[in-house]
Length: 637
Image (cartoon, rainbow, N blue to C red; front, side, top):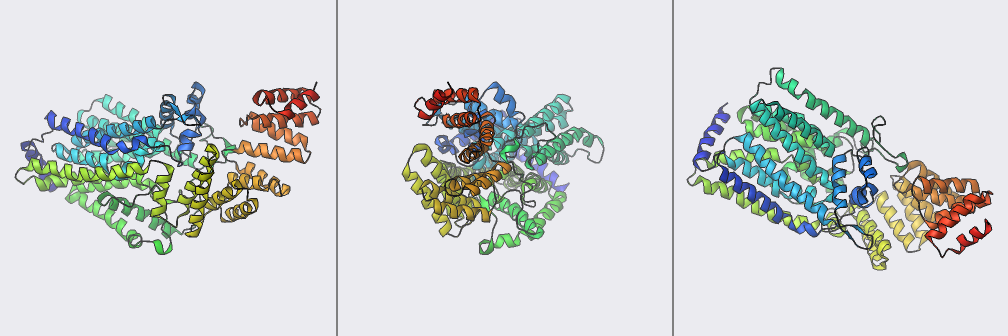
């Protein structure tokens, strides 16, 4: 091909400029510069805190991670988390937790070690990108240096690095890049141990994040670039194992995201009320879904060249907020794909770049209703390697005829690198806390409810933990600001109801709980919270809400059993009270003095004095000042 001939001629020019692939010093200098640049760019993130955006689910409220043990480590291998099966990711977080000092009144792990691990993994990934592209281009150091620079410093990657819960991104990428390098070496050398290494690393990548299943298609692109004979059967037979692994982990991901346990092989607690992400219903037509997917595709490409508009949550464009690019996206995306296919014959490097990007983002484009965000910055983490490689190769071709080509190439890497580094430092600092992170979301999308509900709930939770009334006032201010801005959603109304409940304004709380139920989605936690508000004034409504909360399930369903036990006891249904409190204690670890006391009282009313005495003794051990427990103990003598 003409373009490939030009690329080979560029290689000779690159060698004359000192960029010869075999020379060690340019490569070593680039490697050192990449690591230093990553550490400088992400230094502002080192004092960041955990954020109220998956971090509680992955670390702060995950017993197996928060307090690692041999039993917990074994369970992590079978336990999907947040509708994802990624045991290597969870084990790595547990390792961080085991080695982290405990800080604050709640004695939670210090997040510094978690974030530092992410940063170092990102630095290693940047080096692997450099090594991979160096072997792929074989035209000198410049294309590899440029591609690795974009990967290392692009601010769209901050979400993958500065967010503790996105350990899965940096970890699966580490193994996936290693697999790509192993496959490239296998294709050139024919040595089977490279093939075996690529396969093992691919499996590890899938165990870190299911997104790794795109690797077999990337292997096809690599082989096409290397001009391996894809029309023969051998290259496809070699990939058969990889496609088999991808199919297995793809099926696991689909089943887990639908709330399944993959035929009983995984451990899913049905009482937690896992709702399948794939099954989530969104009120959009098929064409609208296509338009959302196309918009995400186009925006990912736009943000590559024009980074900005950052937000950890990008809602679906609605009404008058839909930009012109959204309306044009259904035409632009097919045009880009067609251009990539046509350019494959004229300029294989451009075709490879676009196809690499497309393969990586296609599984996460919103053609299917998964979640409430139209795009997420973390989805560009691997995808940008393709277009950056194409840009690097084209830049090298453009600069190869210039005098002092080496200086031009250094500038072509250093100047955009410094600009990206500066933007990345600012965005890394945005992840300082939940307040700064979702403050940015609110500023970017003032009518979207998610920023208000998450930030308001975080203030309310901190207020209860730290007994700080000022934080509760901040929660109310944020939530009312959201309603005033026109934001509406079930979670926002639920957060506002919880705020009024915390202020002792039960009537207002019930109004907003009712609005939350009407708005939806109706969750087990929502029904439990409304039951608590109804407990004193509406026993029948409280009982109905608790029954639904238990049926739907939620992460604190043990509290629903405990509250229903109190309701049963109040109505003198002692057998039911005993059964529910026993479930709360034994199955859900509701280990509190008042729980044992209530179970003991119910047992005493049923004439089961030995059980009542045992529970009274346990309640006294947990709360020696409990007069009721002492009275129950005397009654059982």
